[in-house]
Image (tube, rainbow, N blue to C red; front, side, top):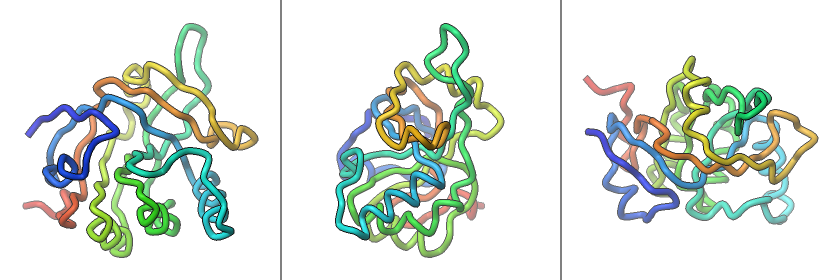
Length: 176
């Protein structure tokens, strides 16, 4: 089923999403990859605030290439999500509601998704140049020293994704 989703969104809307649903996201997402996740995790363990409000946020596992002249952002394909699995349960417990990446997630992450009422979405790897056209604004907001892995605030319009793991733990990779 194809749907349009404004983000941030409500818990009720997230609970309606089902593994296998095709979505078009519009709104604000944040980028973070391995190094940024490690820093956020360590900050939370020290009791510090994160560089953005994680409550109801969606995080895109993305390290874009540099933008060419006239572009908002370079190629914007997803990175492998399992590299963030160590950090994900803590971020979900702090209110993150959605993750966008590619590939399978660990049983611990799927359990945390169910417990916290979140979703895991996949963007299609290999389509980074096309996905970048769905990003209409991009701004580095934290960890600038990480280069492409800095945290960015993105405004996306009709970013195509598929629900992989829904709030009940149904996994599109297991659908028959």
